[in-house]
Image (tube, rainbow, N blue to C red; front, side):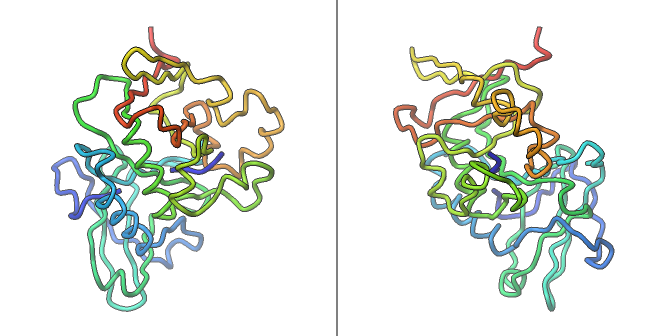
Length: 259
């Protein structure tokens, strides 16, 4: 489906981070906001289970949901009911870390971007450094799913029908299923995805790519309700709960624009 799919303890201070601009909640009547408290719980889960990705930092990523969504100069504000209010820096790659703030947690604050609901989506981003280009590590992706579910990042409409609805289970345990329909997004449009562990190599079947749209034309009508709508050519799902694939398994991508 349809599900999705971190963050460090302190705000990103890197020179490349975009300057933050306070965005009042009243300025956006239909915000695509997330619960600060849930995102912090996702961060706690990351710290508890980071053995799955021992060398990877935790970040959150913002992604477009509509073709017309402008992802330039996206700003974020954490806004509570009383004293909690602060900006969160968004890096040029549209990732960010979420600072811990007790007042914001106590007030069940919201993390609010300056974009309308249904215009963009959220994912966790956990990447072990030093991997070969066009590869990811399965343990990182397993943890992305678990943290993303705990953080409440799924942003699909309740109108999604059939198996898409059944895929949205707001618990990290969903990621332990042999074949959870948790959508990951590659960096570019995909041609193929392979899993490699030692001498074992398997190429994902076509139904594991493109949100299954290739084998079910009826899903075209459901795409407006899926947060993969504009990213369908980048989507893939993985056998996250199949432990015959260890966490060190490499996920290799071949992109449409590769030579």
